[in-house]
Amino acid sequence: MGIADRKEREKEELRASILEAARKLFLEKGVEKTSIRNIADLIEYSPGSIYHYFRDKNEIFHALHQGGFQALGEKMQVLGSVQNPMERLKAMGSIYIRFAMENPDMYDLMFIKEAPIDHLYDQEHCDWKEGAGAFDTLRQTISQCIDHGYFKGHDVEPLSYMIWSTVHGMVSLNIRKRCEVIDFEDKDQIVNLGLQSLFKILDQL
Amino acid sequence: MGIADRKEREKEELRASILEAARKLFLEKGVEKTSIRNIADLIEYSPGSIYHYFRDKNEIFHALHQGGFQALGEKMQVLGSVQNPMERLKAMGSIYIRFAMENPDMYDLMFIKEAPIDHLYDQEHCDWKEGAGAFDTLRQTISQCIDHGYFKGHDVEPLSYMIWSTVHGMVSLNIRKRCEVIDFEDKDQIVNLGLQSLFKILDQL
DNA sequence: AAATTTAATTAAACACTGTTTAATAAAACA
DNA sequence: TGTTTTATTAAACAGTGTTTAATTAAATTT
Image (cartoon, rainbow over all chains, first blue to last red):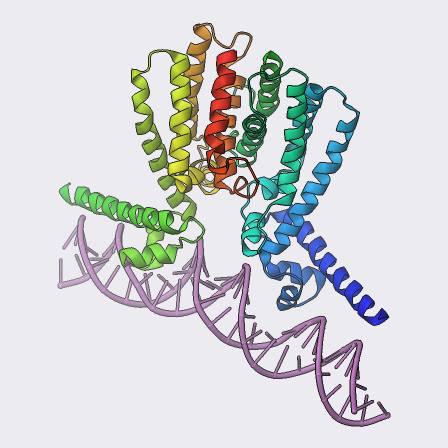
């Protein structure tokens, strides 16, 4: 059936163009100020038609947040050339933080906004494969660190969670503007200084 | 002028009753689903009248977030009895995390939501005295730790920021539902395990 | 080729939202 | 009592996500 194939292709194309319009608007104005009507206007369709391709706004932003994980994953690929697991762990932290600071809205969507996660709870299978996958590479790296003699006396999972939380905490306090309004000695270097502080501690363990 | 005093008192009372209604609704339904009309309905005034007491919704939620800092500050008062600065630092962390996990919506408002901070930027003096004050007690405690010989080779501010970020990261990943959807070995103990992991590290420094 | 069925699209409506404006009611002052 | 200030409100504005029913277009069957 060639016709069914073409129709499927066309449907996929329109779905993709909705997502492209949504991403464009979202990167310009943020999630809250990107409305279904805005997206519909941009692709020159009616607002209602979008609901034939996505069940609701949350699904659109869940799809966008997947693109964010793809982009982050690509940046992480340079880690393949870092042999020492401790060096790799540090490089992961640097890349993670650079990604967050260079793409604050995307990071916000991936790790702070409730929209993408709320969509999971509306589905039957509510496992966050993007996040779980990313956490797993961190867990593996830290596991290898332990195998190499680092982090003696520490359990993999709590330590992985704690380190993730540290970098997430630093960038999310920034993205949600809790740093600009505190008089740090070096406001726009505080994230890097904090990261250096973390590195120093990891070396001591 | 007794009349002016009474008027001021009455104005303050109505302002307080708006805040009380707002807090009640906010704790029941969250910020986004608490509307000006909801608040107005509860105090039996028209929606427009609220704008004689608050310039906008952000100011209401900024006022509520102040109440959160008050509550957190009160919980922190038991720290006065902890002499050793390292013990005090750990107790601070425990109290901080317990407060966040027991009052997730209030914590969200204080440290994640943009509403209270956006209100600061609409004012002339945009310093976040609540947050800066809280951070300062952390900074002082860590400064005392360094005086007592802990954290050798570390700078106060980056270290304080990093430790704040760690606890903030752990609770905010929970509050924004990034933990429930990852298959941790012990999902509802992961925050405590992460905190224990942090304590272990602090002891090693 | 014509009739029927299926799928895509849309206009309109629903029930909301924060905020502003202009009119009204109430209180205080002269 | 008349005037001014203050408080309150109804109504409107310009939006929001989402649903429904009607319409148009396309594909399939007769």
